[in-house]
Length: 446
Image 1 (cartoon, rainbow, N blue to C red):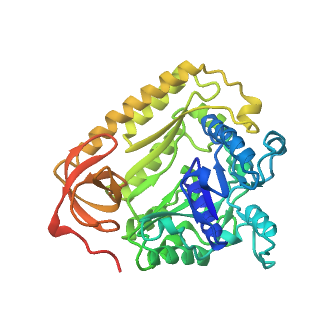
Image 2: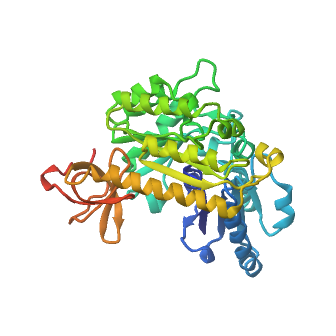
Image 3: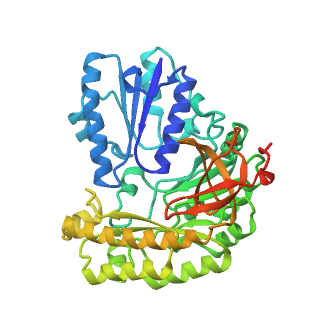
């Protein structure tokens, strides 16, 4: 029996799919990269943007003929398109789908498969809807010994509810995983060859906030830092309101925690930020960036920006452009606003910025960030950087620096999972190339 998983969207979806694959393999299924060969197909969907939702619908339509030819094929639609409360419209539109699963929850699929095969899955009363995905994680067979960097969810859902965001409605309220569960999963991953973990949350800084007197993200970082075999630790995505000095100090003090912060600004105009319900001003964000740079020497900072939010004027967009030019951040993930049904923005704010104007603003920021990133990365020319090697890509080794810079280099042997000192010989806005300093090759972690 074989399974195939198609995943769209964020790192949380990638982590969810990995856990579904692990659960399926415990039932005796094996992975196939080809949907036509599979007995079970899982579509793990994203709806954060219209383009992602359209891809999910397109993929669903391509599976209908396959299901008609093979009625025994099990199709599972999972993720944010389904949502935590279900979506009856989908049941009517896609009657050939056998199972609909909420985000981060493989149980509907596993229940369907075990019942159809005459088996049962015993669950204790204390298990939550995430129970089959928590604790020790046995990677899918095709990733064991191959996966160097893994994503570990620490906070499910979100309770902030920005006016443009559908995530709280599709993934539900915040739910922090226990420290022990997370540590067990990271320890299990380290034993399977993983050398870097990224702790995930929609607002990862709010880890533990839903628990009375609960742990903080800084506390969690200190626990994960003690796990043998893990060389690097990252976390994302942060929110400006919850990035405390305690957290920044933990990043600065813990050698395994990388000097890289992802903290979205979304807009550089105060009125747009107010309509987005972000809870801070452009000056607040400026001060945060200053604080981050003061406490973490050599830090790289990434941000997210939405252009064309309802009501955004040319002048307000210019404020965003000016802020990005002023702060000179390492990375800016850009998006054009698209209405998400069910959000406050969709119900109360007309989508009044024309598509062509959204694209114009997008291109202006894209060009600006390319220039900024080019200038930042040029500083690494002829410098030696430490690279954690992830995989081979088009004949070159591919890896990242502690500050999340992508580096390619050529070298003989199997360097996967090793820390390699690389002298940078070429820099561009999105990646760098270099040559290894052979005497600086680090041994694989025990």
